Length: 458
Image 1 (cartoon, rainbow, N blue to C red):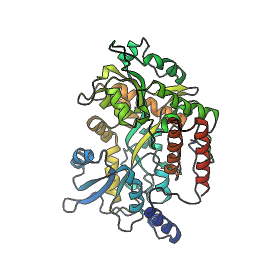
Image 2: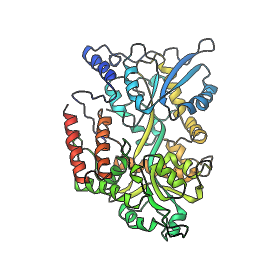
Image 3: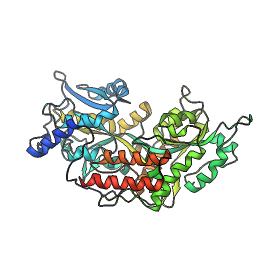
């Protein structure tokens, strides 16, 4: 995907639900929605002992409770007069709920956590505050925007404006079991390992480890089941060979020899996976890796702690598990960006307090705290260059920094478009059809191209 892609659609496609669509359409037609209003005044600032300011964030339910229980009390040590409520919202409801809240004259929420591809849609709807401009008067002088790595910060940028800041950064990475590589007589992987080399070595990693004559360990695990996060491995292979999903005019460019070969790589990896791997979503390959049943997995880096550190859920230890970027193509290593950002609604009644909360979370000091206490991946260069409080994080920090650089160079992220969700659904449908053996890689990508072209005409 070309970083400069800023296509303004003729019609905003909202896949998040009819109600949100109706509100946005009304706003666009009448010019009376929140998108036409200037950013709010400070809304009570950061409160006083006599009058607290109350703010509410809608957050992915995967981490909302942790934030409420641990992060908010820490924040209140410095800002005791801002009362923060973190409302847990299921992932599938967040985007629609955000669109509704942003166009509500009496909004319930001040803040939202955004998944990587959502910023363009919400920004085009005019419901988010441009933090570098609208909130400039409340930004601490020491905040240091330049300290953020480009890849995670760009997740919440659209059309030259900064609508969010990275709260929980993630990258698609490779974990490998050192003992299983040694047993197969193979050298441990390095970041220079290519996809071709990986596939050549894979048969050796299908092993009988206990000598009973039966295979009990396989080469690879990843998400093969259909889902919006199933296309990233295919895309990572394509990107590593210099390919892209779209050109600068938002025309699909993946139905090529390189695109077909990349999808065929994901299909071929199934040959070296455990029985039933076509049903692997996120948890299944991770469980197989923890139990020593696969020698490597391609998964989100945030899973490293549960894969290699936490004895309650894994049989492995950090010295047994390697972590690095995914194999390389002709243009270098591969990865895929997945960032949760925090944004302030433009119609928030308390924008200064809301931005103060986000600043604290993502400041140099706050990020070190969230990394060491909550295990969140940092986005700042200074954090990644520091010595972590726990030894197992040292190779993780090195790998994350490398992955950010790789992602930024190869623009390895989901489509940047107000129609991103709909595009991702099409890619998930068609790439999954190839993986499940329902069609060929060639036909899958041809169909995906036709469907996306039709979508973008509307």
